[in-house]
Image 1 (cartoon, rainbow, N blue to C red):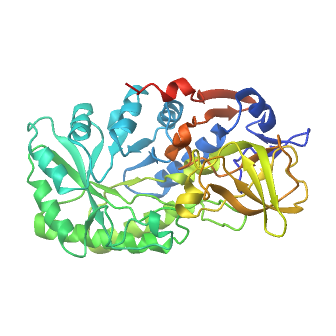
Image 2 (spheres, rainbow, N blue to C red):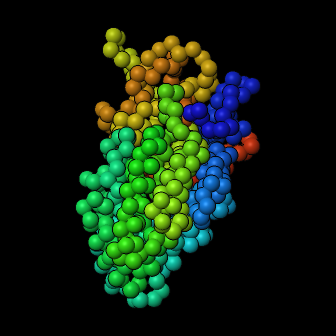
Image 3 (cartoon, one colour):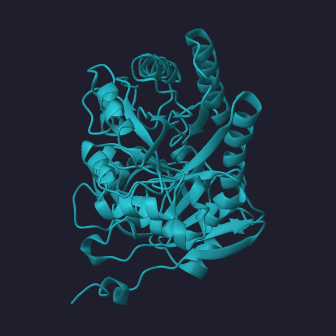
Amino acid sequence: MLFPDTYEVNTAGRMSVGGCDLSELAGEFGTPLYVYDETTLRSRIAEYRDTLHQMYLGESLLLYAGKAFLSIAVAKLIEEEGVGLDVVSGGELYLAEKAGFPMERVYLHGNNKSAEEVDAAARLVIGGLVVDSMREIELLRGMPKSPHVRSTLRVNPGIQPDTHSFISTGQLDSKFGFPVETGQALETLGRLLEVPVADVTGVHAHIGSQIFDLTSYVAAVDRVLDFLVQARDRLGFVARDLSMGGGLGIAYTRDDDPPRPSDFVRVIVEAIQEGCTRRELQLPRLLLEPGRSIAGPAGVAVYTVGAIKEIPGVRTYVSVDGGMGDNIRPKLYGSLYEAFKVNAPDAEATETLTIAGRYCESTDILIKDARMPRLEPGDLISMPAAGAYSLAMASNYNYNVRPAVVMVREGQARLIRRRETYDDLLLTEV
């Protein structure tokens, strides 16, 4: 299903999410508008968390990926659900701190953390600093010996999943992680264990994003567990924590058929439990970081149609009031989406239209050759599966403002991020 769990066509024949009419939301909050369904966010978290707790024989912790989409309201929701948060920058860490998020459930990633970010991780006593460079180790070496900084080492298992090369991170040629197959991971782990301030709890691995083939995870688990055997036998290191990342894909079009979160958890858990038993490894605490598969299905983007340009025999461009400034994924990855007419979602698709953005780039195309009903200026269209890596990568290109965001539940909508103003754009000017 492309839309959030609460999606329906209401009695007025219009699209509704969380009991809220998308047309009415657009009228109240303007467009472009991002609408997040609270019920979907909580249900996706619960499916991961509950399956993990039911199946895994050891301790476990689910982590929400802040880089998919993060706000104060989302951080508070995650806290209420009793799960953790992985962040990738000092800014995301700062937001978590301001939201009052429990720091012991925060994990900081990044291949080029600044000294200030490493210091912040130590000062806030976060759950784990995911070490991803030799420079980080040197930064830790220069710190006072107390208090200890809980740390994990990011290793690269050398697995390339069937996904876009731009979002594949587990292959040998990657800026992320220390390669297992070259011996660098073991050598680096040895160096990290020598740092007095570092309380090394385990390892982290992540093979990529938007993955449908779960067998890639089984192969990655085997590589990582073999590495832990080496670490035990040659360094005397026993991992207390093991993070296998996330990366489960979601449906962006009606042709997509991704596995369920529970399927993902089952495959990971069975591979780890069987693999640890076979290798006589202590069962570590298992951390999972399912990014887009929580936020992605919960979000819907709503746009207003503006100019329409027909080129007979070639193409019809339908321009909307958003585009690559709020969703760069089609331009960046060639990502596919589908669009629907908000006031007539079940109307027959009679035309082939290209949905274009308003930004001054010829490649600012949201959807090429979309099959839709006829559209007129002023019509509203919605794009489902827009909850992850859209607003998170939004920009002010062309000095445009970023959209408002609302959270909906049981017929109530609350603004969780206001639309920027032109004055906001000038705040940093000196």
